[in-house]
Amino acid sequence: MIKKCIWAIFFLISVKAQAQYKPDVLVFGSSAAGCAAAIQSAKSGVKTLLISQNEYLIGDIAPNMKVKAFDAGIWKEWKDQYQKSADTIATDPRTILAEIIKNTKGLTFITNVEVSNISQKNKGWELKVKIDGKTEEIKCKILIDATFDAKNSLLAQFNVIDFDKNGNFLNIIPIPSGQKLLPENTAQKLFRTSVAAGFGKDSTQLKTIPLGVFIPQEKENLLMVSVACFKNDKATDLNNLALWVNMGQAVGALAAYGPYFDTSPDKANIRMTQGEMFTHKSFLYPLMDIAIMDASWVAIQKIIAAGILKFDYEKGKFNPNGNVSATEVKTILSELYPRSRIWFIENKIDQFTLAQTISLMSFISGKDPITMQQEAVSDWKTKYKFVTNFVETDLINREEFTVLVDAYLAPFSIRVDFGGNFLR
Image 1: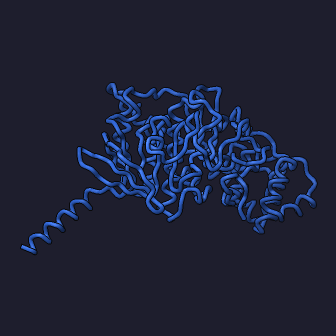
Image 2 (image 1 turned 90 degrees about the vertical axis):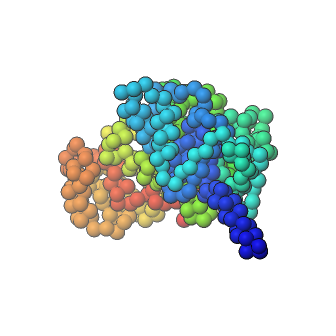
Image 3 (image 1 turned 30 degrees about the vertical axis):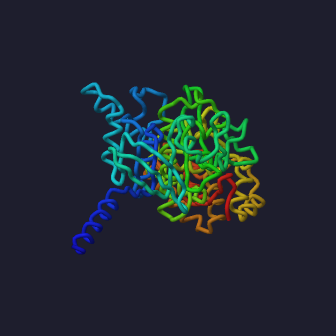
C-alpha cells in the first residue's frame, strides 16, 4: 500500500514537471514584433515560448504585406513565403507566419492563454497561467512584452512596471527629444547602438532604432517591444509592419544573449547582438543607395556603426562613390587607433588614394604594405566585386575605403556601451 502511494505521488510530480513549460525566453503578445522576437530568440539558440491571450496572430485582421520595406531578415523570409503561396492561392499572411513559427526549432507557440499573475523570481520570471482549463506555472529567464499598446499590456495589468500618462516606460537609454535621426554630432552616440531600421509610416520617413529603448530601467531580464518604448514618437510614425518585424527580431537576439551567456540584457555585448542581426540577414541602418545584395552592404553597415564615415540618416544616403577626405576620418581614426595620429602628421593629404589608404592601414595594423596591396589587388573584383580597376594612384571612393578598412582594421569589433561610447 505504501509502495502504491509512493508511486502515485511520484507519478503526480512527474506529470506536473512535464506539464510545466520551462523556456529560456518567454514572449507574450503575438504581434508582428512578438512573433519576430520569438522566432529570432529560438534561432539564436535558446528555448523560447510564445504565448497569446487569443487565437490570432497579429490581431483579427490580416496585415498588409505591401508596405514600404527593406527586404531582409525575418521580414524577407515571411514576405517571400507569402508571395510564393499567394501566387497560387489566396493566402492569409498570418497562416504563413504561423507555419514559420511552427517550423522554427526550439520555439513553442500556445494560444488562448489566460494569465493570472506575473512575478519576478530571483533573476527570472514566473507566470501563472491557465492553458486548456489547466493551471500552469511557467518560469523563464527573460520575459518579453510584445503587446503593441501598453494599456492592454499584462505588465500594466499586474503593476510590474510603471507607465506614464502617455503609456511609456523609462528606458535605460531613451531617445532624447530632437534626436530622432540619431546624428553623429550629438553628445550621445546612439547611432552606434542601432539594432533595427526601416521605414516609418511612409516612404519619406526612415527610422534607426538604438538597442537601449527596449530595456526598462525598473526590472532586470525584462524587455519590451511596443509603442511604449518610444516617448518622442507617435504610434502613427511607427506604423509599418516591416519595421516592427525588424525591431522584434532585434529584441529576440538581445533576449537570447542573456541565457546564452548567463547574463542580463542590460549587460549584453552590443556588437555581438548587432552581429547576430547580420548572421540572420537583418540590418542596422536604412541604406538607400546600396542594394542589400551588394557585397559591400554589411561592411558599410559596420563602418556606419563605428562612425568612421558619415551617413545621412534623414535620406538614407551613404554616397558610396564619393571621395574620402582626411578631415572626415582623421578624428575618429585617431580615437580608435591612436597610432594613426603619427601617420596623419607625416602624411599631409586632402583626399585618399588607394596607395595612401593601404599605407594608413599598414601603419595602423603593422601588416606589410606590399602583402596588403597584393591581397587587395587579388580580391578587388573577385571577393569585393568592385567595378573599378585597382590603380594605386587613383582616388579611392567611400565604398572601397569602407570595405578595405573593415577587412584590415575591423573597427566594428571595438565594443560600445548603450550610450554609444567606445569601451577599452
